Length: 513
Ligand code: XMP
Image 1 (cartoon, protein in one colour):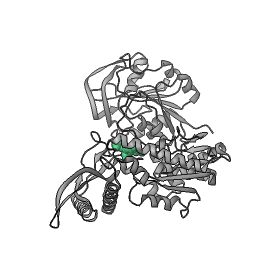
Image 2 (spheres, helix red, strand yellow):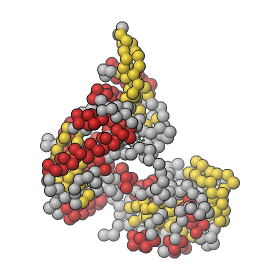
Image 3 (cartoon, helix red, strand yellow):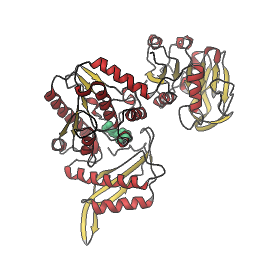
Image 4 (cartoon, protein in one colour):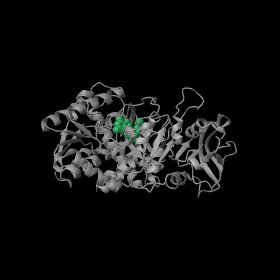
């Protein structure tokens, strides 16, 4: 069966992934592609609709991303958002200029709800604006369907040609009725039926893998995180004992985590998997000796991981396929590809260059994180595993500022276990998206009993975030903070100070390194 597709054409906007996710939440499959995708490719993909994303440029600059105007004549409905709306106007002979007043943030617009796009929303509604240019004059055949006090064309359309545009961002939650607008686009305008459901994805993926792998053997690097766990279980449903999972315990996991992963996936767990646990902590600590710089540590850990994995793969021998838990945000190619590298994230993702496999299988390649979690539930994975917080591939290696030692690992593991226990116990009305302990490289003087101490400062960090791209410090009640501080200092040897990190992202990042 051909799946319905909405194509999101990325012009460098910050919210491109969010657009695709919102469309998928309407049960319609969406993919993000860079604006450099050839029109011939688009025709082959035969999407039910196309969305132009926002972007940082001005349409009238020569170097700005543009597209073949033919795309607007294919008869496929197009929705332009922000830069995408200006581009649509520009391509069709409308006028785009610098607005006398830039609009950033929540704004009220007046909407003509007779528009198919805006049908069913309030006539006065809150939307999220973020622009310095605006459409001054709409192209011929278009009508204005929304405006704000300073933006004459907050939405426009040529319904006969199925072309629609909003200056505001329907995909961000601050646009109160944005979901309704996107749903109008995909259902009423594009005519989608909504065939994207996670259970049908899981079933068809299992069948597809079975066909592709046949009697071949596959190896999966299992970290115990959500993505690789879901990938492993899905693969095992597809090919059973022809799958071997290798779990490398690099000694940088959270307290008891290695045993927990083994309990779920090992011989006493409920999955009938070939499971190999490699206890490689000492090896990693050796390699990390003297390394202080975060990127250097990440590279050492990534490299060593590959070496351990490679050795195991050789022992097993004759493995045709490598399974990776890559997910969609990891693969989306940015339209402009100019974003700066803040950190080189190491998942177990960097493996394939070094080991000799015929093919790589990435069963979750097209899924967003929340969809991976739903797939995990569908596959019967334990709830606590499916809803786990993200944990970086280099583990505590990037939660220990400066050189990593086994002693520091012990401290941060114990402090982290206490902090997580107390937060879970506190049952906060808004649970932080990620919370953990890290170890600053600072030692300071304290007094315990009648003795001088010269010990480490533990940093506690709790953030609210939905996409992990931005984050705000969570509000932790003072009594909970005090309990954590007291317990950590009393129970964790080597700590005499506890600090709470209040920094948001940006300017900070979530992890300390
Ligand atoms: P940052 O620290 O960049 O983190 O704000 C954003 C999210 O990514 C996780 N993270 C990593 N995940 N390998 C990973 O697999 C890494 O090297 C890595 N560094 C950060 C982090 O925990 C947060 O959820």
